[in-house]
Length: 246
Ligand SMILES: Nc1ncnc2c1ncn2[C@@H]1O[C@H](COP(=O)(O)OP(=O)(O)OP(=O)(O)O)[C@@H](O)[C@H]1O
Ligand SMILES: [Mg+2]
Image (cartoon, rainbow, N blue to C red; front, side, top):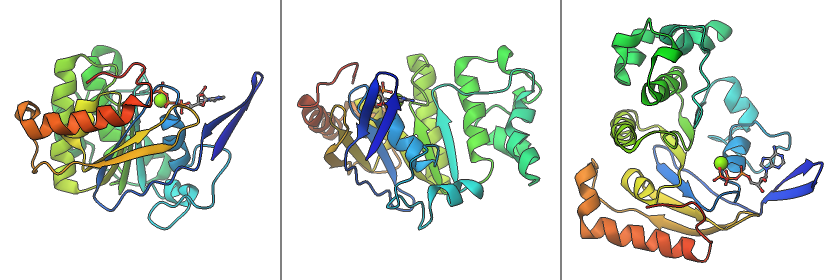
C-alpha cells in the first residue's frame, strides 16, 4: 500500500498490490489514469520514501538493487541533459559510478550510432527515447522499468520502438515491467498483461498472452490477438477505461 500526503489531504495510491515478474519475463501494466501505475513503478525503483518490506528485486530491496544498477528506468520524458551530446548522455551514469560502458555499442543497439555527436535538441522524439533506452541499458540491468516510454510519440515511431524493444528483449531476456495506455501495445509485447482498477489501484486481472515469439506487427490482425485485446478490454471495463485506447 502507498499513500501520498499532500496539502489537499492524503491519497491512497495503491492498495494491496502483489505482483511478481519472473526472470526474463515481459509484463505490461494497464489501468485507468490515476490508478497508481507510476506509483507502483516508482516503488519498485526505490524512488518512494515509504519502502514496503515485501518489495523485492531479485531477492533484494529496491535500494540495494538501485545501488548496483540492477534496474534501468525509462519514462515518458527521456530526461536527457540538453548540453551534452547523445554519447555523453549515455555515458553519464558510468561517469558518476566510475564504471566503463561501450557507448558506441549501446547506440548501435538502439539504432542511433550515427547520432552520437548530436545534442538532444537536434533529435526527434523517437530518437530521444532511443537515447533514454540506451542509457537505461548501459549497466546491463536485469529489470527494465518502463513508464509509458512511447506515450509521447507518433504512431509510426511508436511501432518502430516497440519492435526495437522486442528485439532487444528477445536477445537479452531482461525482465520488463512496462506501463502503457495502449491495450494493443501491451498484448503485442507481453507475456502477461496485468490490469489495475481505478484508484486506489488493485490488480483485477492477470492475462497470459500465449501468442508465439518472436512477435511481429502483422500479428495484430490475427484472431488470437483480437481475442486477447477483448479479454483485457473486458477486464478494464469495470475499471472505467479513461483515456485508454486500443
Ligand atoms: N507526488 C504525489 N503527491 C501526491 N499525490 C500523488 C503524487 N503522485 C501521484 N499521486 C496520486 O496518486 C494516485 C496515483 O497516481 P499515479 O501517477 O501512480 O497514477 P497512474 O496510474 O500512473 O496514472 P497515469 O495513467 O495518468 O499516468 C493519483 O491519485 C495521484 O493523484
Ligand atoms: Mg503514470
